[in-house]
Image 1 (cartoon, rainbow over the protein chains, first blue to last red):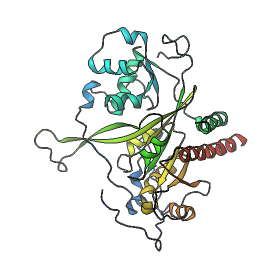
Image 2: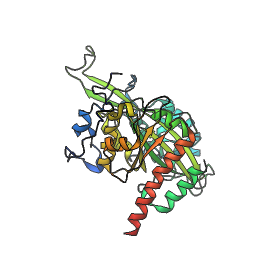
Image 3: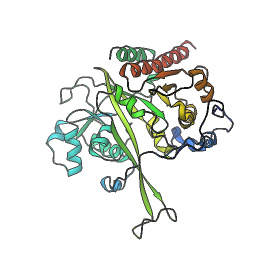
Image 4: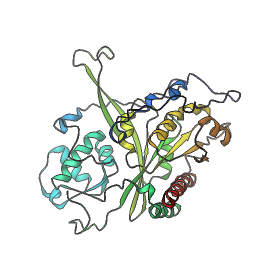
Amino acid sequence: MSPSPKEPSDDDVLIRPFLAVPYPTDPGVNGTGSHPTGHSRAARAGAASPEANDGLEVRPYVMTGGRARGGTDLPWETLVITSSYGRTVKASFEIAGILRLCEHMQSVAEVSAHLRIPIGVARVLVADLVSDGRLEAGTPPPRHAADDVEFIERLMQGVAAL
Amino acid sequence: MSTMNGDAPNGAGRTPIPVKIIVSGGFGVGKTTAIGALSEIDPLTTEGAMTTASVGIDDRGQRDQKTTTTVAFDFGRVTIDASIVLYMFGTPGQDRFGFMWADLMDGALGGLVLVDTDRIGDCFVALDYFEKIGLPFVVAVNQFEGRSNLGLEQVRESANVDPHVPVVAVDARDRESMKQLVLNLLQLLLRRARAATAN
């Protein structure tokens, strides 16, 4: 990796310029399309660095018939399990792989990782399999769990007991 | 859509609630190590593929004028109890994949920003991003062995974060240290949730 252009020393503590540049005003719907590149303060500090970028030789949109989105946008942590119908019905190679993997409950992210399917494609395929009944979706990921005092307390007890 | 709850054919009762936290910071700061220290599975990698027009940028020969780039997200899983599964997702340090971040952040409980004091500027992208989307986070200074470190107050000064944001030390390799870090984040969430409830 390339060295940072600016190495902080003890004499010259690098300070993140605070609100020197206003936030971009085009966050789009639900923040999608928002993008941290608008921040020249981070860019000025040379913060961006190249990371692992392995080539993935797939044409993702072949598997989904060219669709980028399924009927629902499943969060990455959504849990799914193969239904009894999904266990018996015939399926194409890729789909059969998903149905086999999900005989034990998996998240969409785990489906993507284990089967080496890009996450966006995994979301579409899993959403389709849920809507045709071959996969069953678990409890949907809560959208505002961080605001739920009781839930956070339960989580803290659980983490402390790990 | 069908669900696993109720009289599911697989005999599943209520299924766990999946929640996630985001682990961010610069390249090589120890995000995957941190995830692995707490995860019950070896960290997995999910890839996002992005197709970009690359006319005049990337000569891929005569085949086409598009190139597929991938960006990797490492993640781990922690079963909290029968009713909660916690996922920890690591973000790539680079900011040009911000559109994938937005996709990942949806519904996240909070974030951990790992800092290497030798390259403190590497965490600024994450700080900027979490602040922008309003995700609560803790700044965690990874204590690498044998490295001289800035003090936590110097890191706070550098990072220029809100006084309510905890700045703590962590050993990303150590399970107990990572547990404590996640608890720090949850304590922050609890304070916020209680304050919001009181209003």
